[in-house]
Image (cartoon, rainbow, N blue to C red):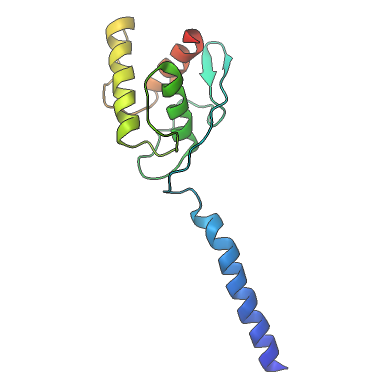
Length: 132
């Protein structure tokens, strides 16, 4: 009886680890393409993942802010590459091109650093809202 209880507990522990492990690591660093569902609520546009204007997308893990920024950049005509939520080299280059365009064509004073932060978010959301 003792042996069968130990066996059951061991199997249950292993199964829990197998079932829980994918949820723990799913999507954190692996590329997965996401779709974008655009909508506007003037003066901002949204893509269905993040509605704020303060979170900076991560260059190392998948975030909803990263997906949102990539979707909006794509909609604005600045190709960030695969919409995967990781704000890597392609996404940062697209953000820099967007920032440069906003500064030169619309009089903004955004840092051209490729970071979508508290000043770039509103500019990006507004541009997409009125561009499309």
